[in-house]
Length: 127
Image 1: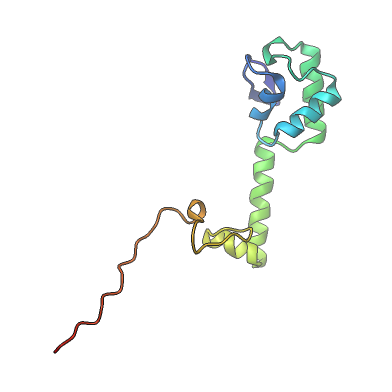
Image 2 (image 1 turned 180 degrees about the vertical axis):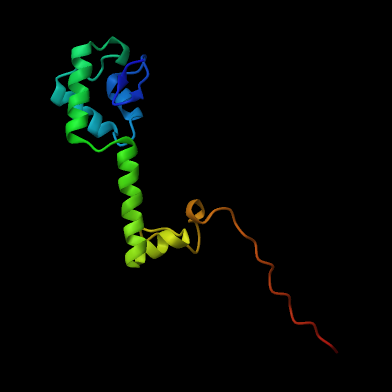
């Protein structure tokens, strides 16, 4: 398994898919990286030469924020939103959808499993 910027990538996959195993690099960025480093995107990750690996690594380290540093940056951005007390920060704090989605139905991913509340009982007639 070749190691690129501290992440083991699978041998048997095409390099453009294997690069997506690095946190912060998706398919589009992977193809851009390979075009810039002049590596064929269909080459299997295990078949790359040391020269090709070093070119890919240099481009990633130079142009992209990835891995733990990206996670830290995202966490800091959310903490900033919470601290300034804006609407998005408030939604993060309460665990509700942040980007305008409805919550009356759906939103189960953010809200978690349903918490059933007992229904209102009908008023009993005393007569």
